[in-house]
Length: 196
Picture 1 (tube, rainbow, N blue to C red):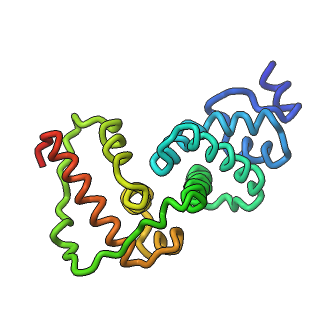
Picture 2 (cartoon, one colour):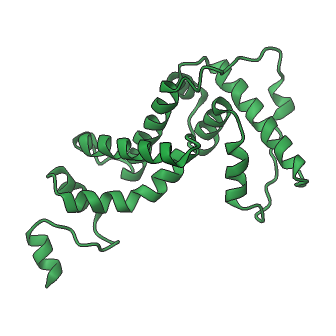
């Protein structure tokens, strides 16, 4: 009975299996309960994604709030083609990158000359016993530029051309940053005596 009353009032209940399309539609109508449900559903994942770029939790939370403001503001532009979660993630990553640009954290990106990418392209064999948190801690130790390019390329799946456009750097700088990031991660793994 409660569910039917909530539906009549266009207020989604807190059912985790609530149809995503109905939730989006209710958000488009400005329904605050639907917006809260959407936020609750996606905030934990998005905060994790943002933290890969923004080290401090308080700054990451600020980016999350700004990102959700943009999600709700631009919800009409979601064409319902592809994943809604992917659309939200793209907004959050762009917000994180804007925050880094405002802090001028990406200005330290440099292009390295005379580097043979094949020298650093060996895949590290990661044991399942190395916890995700440990890997994230190692990533957090990388300088902002290296960490950002690594996240965009390895985790988000962007191509170097896209990364270059997003960050306002050259394609070669993106490639160089990735090479050095991989090298530093490899060194960090070796420093904790992790078999590579």
